[in-house]
Image 1 (cartoon, rainbow, N blue to C red):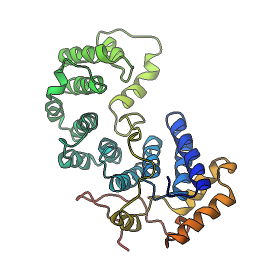
Image 2: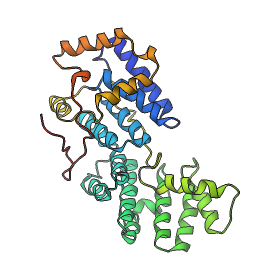
Image 3: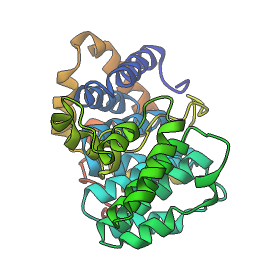
Image 4: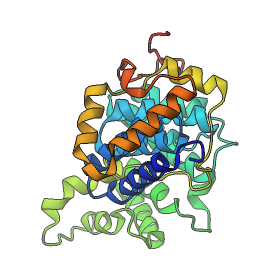
Length: 313
């Protein structure tokens, strides 16, 4: 954020910190902070990433898609493809989730990202009723690897769930057990599902069963895909000329009235008149128009080719 005036940079940083602290406990408030940061620094890649991830956790699927696609263009990274695919599932478009999986260059993806994208794509197959295909997709070498990776438990859990969906109960039990063995962080409810298959009912399970299954396998459920910012991205990342054109072609995915409501929801001392004045001065000096004067274009929904279908200006 070195390109910002110091008072503005400090305000944006406070909003980003608040977003990170609230994203799991209060996603709506986290999104309000992220939108406030975007009003001040919409050309900072980390800010667009924060808005996208907060929107995903808050269930604002269209906003999440628009912001994370913008982040990918600005940063040159493809680190949130699984989140994008899960948003497409949540919007009832599993075919697009599968298209994202097919179009990804998995050799260039981080293994964790590639694995999460595979899990989401297999879930999309299940959404389409192609349950046997979902089982086949998950039969990858990493499934039986002796080395436990951070994503191993989730991959084994997804495979067990897919097996159970096609009636292969005994095999599902085996893989729920193998998932529980490596799930030291409690990311899944594999141990509980294993007990359930054995006919063991724990007091309180009936109340939590539906929400637990949604988190584990449902599209777009909060936490369905681990969504965290890229820690290795420099804060002072600046967009290329092509990025600036993209930003002019595709607005942030929310109208100004929603942004103003979001800013009103955050503490008033976070956004002072002096901060806003400094930011506007920076924009004028750079020859750009402020976010407040731009007309919103809507959700930035991608078309079948993966590009935004927002009207070109």
